[in-house]
Image 1 (cartoon, rainbow, N blue to C red):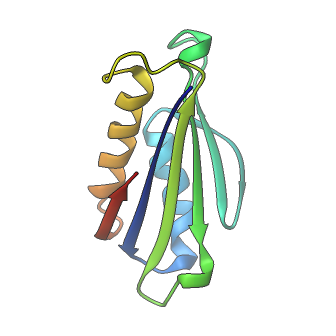
Image 2 (cartoon, one colour):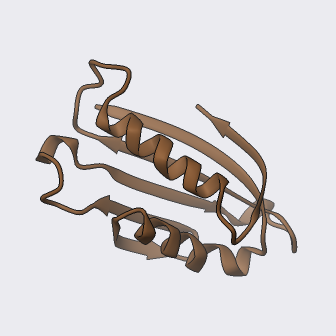
Length: 115
């Protein structure tokens, strides 16, 4: 099972983060499955890759550390594919989504920490 994580500190109000993140994930060709004010579950659209390679993205918004100008969030990107190669589909999607978050025009990235 492939699994990649990353945490971000960005300069945007916590009130705007969730809708902006939903839009960003949809722009990455991910379908929103479920969301709450501090959690988003998105999945790669079926039919583009084999079932075991379908990527799931979980975004967790940390409201406890939020200020008027800074927000923290983490993403977990995973699939059922065994990561037998370093450059597998899950890793490629992780790098793509991470890059989109880091380069988004909707906020300024303060810190990014991949795990």
